[in-house]
Length: 246
Image (cartoon, rainbow, N blue to C red; front, side):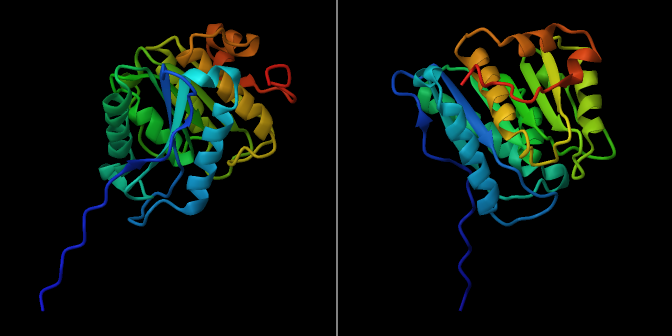
């Protein structure tokens, strides 16, 4: 008896969060993953991405911005295949199909942060948020695709999963061709950014809605963008940051 071929997996968008009125911007939240795996994205990584989407939607500006979590075909980066990047590009195309010509922010943790940085060259993307990006120990990821985008990176200084110096070096290369780049160091925090979770989320909200809804950045974020390297790429995220913003 001949075996039936399994249906090809497809990426998809999670349900929309936010946007009580006309949509003027979209956040695509990209989950973390693994170096190599052809399994589906883990429920834990998906839940974390969805939680970030919900947090980003809980602001007064969110009535004009919708958040979607991207569900990858595979949880692994898988070498040169870079499967999540293709899924993120598909998701940006799907946003255009659904919402028209609106700006997109790619936001991700871990592997999702690397995916956001790599897929940031899509013509609809105007900003990238990379939290604790998982980056290769050898070789340099490209940065020229991020020319003209506003980019924020944040990394825990005690990250043992991916060396924070890797994100600093990437930001340093990017700053040479794009002034709209800054990076925050979350002191004593680890890869998951749990200890300063509230501060990281407040920083993320301010960045996302500043880039998509046209609002002014808070003073620390504005200073980080304006500061020359290395100052603007090693900005400390202060304890208690964001309490006046939320």
